Image 1 (tube, one colour):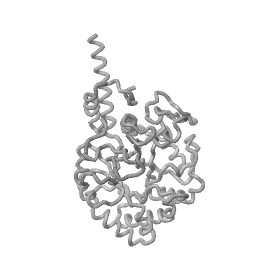
Image 2 (cartoon, one colour):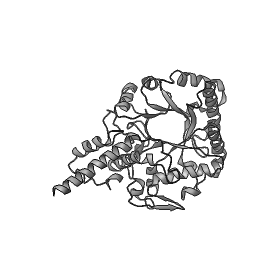
Image 3 (cartoon, helix red, strand yellow):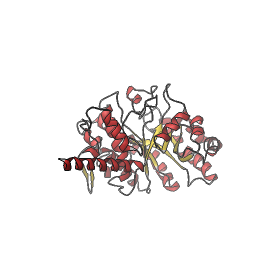
Image 4 (spheres, one colour):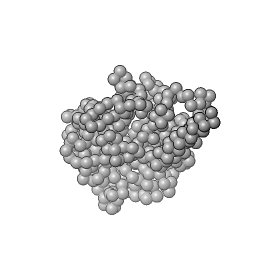
Length: 370
C-alpha cells in the first residue's frame, strides 16, 4: 500500500514538473485588448503581465499609456496598426515615417517591439473591411521602409494579421489553398513577407470551427484531449484541430509557390460563456493544453515551435456579440480566471485543485491528465 502511494506521488510530481517546464519556455504571449469600461490602468496591466511571467504581448493600437508602461519591462510586443489608419499610411509615406517616429522610435529599444501588425483581419471580399484591402500592402511597405531607414528591419518585422476565412477548403490540410477570390490580395503580401523575412500573423480559433460543425468535429479533437489521431493526411496524423488548422495555413502558403514564410499565431482562445460550446471547463482545458502544446510544432513543421498569443488578457464588456465578452484569462479586477500559469504551472495546478472538492476527478481532463 505504501509503495502504491509512493508511485502515485512520484507520477504526480513528474507530471507537474513536466507541465511546469513545458510552460516555462513556451512560445506564449497574451493579447491586451482594451474594449472594456472597467479595466485596470495600463501600468497595472503591465505589472500583471510581469507578476504572471507573461513575456509577450499583442497590443492592437499604439496606446501611449501602455507603451510607456512597457518600458524596460522585458515584454516582447506585437504593436498593432489599427485598420482605421491603413489608408493614411498607404497613401502618404510621410505619414508612415511619422507613425514610426511617434510609436516605435520614441519607445524602442526600451520597449521590445518585435512585430508591427499592419491591420487585423481585413477581408478583401464581401465585408465591411473590404474597401481597406487595397491599402494593406502599401501601408505595410511604407511602414517597412520607415523601419528600414532606421536600420531596424532585421529587429522589427512588419506584417499583417489574417484569419482563416481567407483559406479555401482546410481539409485535408496539405491540399489547402487561399481562396481564388482573395489570391490577388494575399499573394503579393506573401511575396513581400518572403522578401522581408517576416512571418504571417494568423488568428486561429478551433472553437469557432467546432461551434460551426460539432457533428463532424469532436470536442476532444478541438480541446487537445483526443487520446489518438483523429485525421490522416498522407504522412501526417492529426490528434488535435489546432495543428490541422495551422498546417492548413502552412500548406496554403507553400502551395502559392512563392516561398517559405513562417506563421505566428497572433490570436487563439476559447470563450467561457456566451454561446454553444462556450464554458469555463472547455476554456480552461483548451487554453491550458494550448500553452503546453505549442513548443512541439505541428506535423508539417515539427522542428518549429509555434509562437502563439492567447486572446485575451481580460473579459471586455464593450465587445459584441455576447460571446466576445468572455475570452479573458483574467477578470477586470485582475483576478485569474483559470488555474494555469506561465512558468509556475505546477503550483498553480495544485492551488486550483485544492480549492475544489472534486480534486483530481475533474470532469474535463487536460491532455496531460490522460
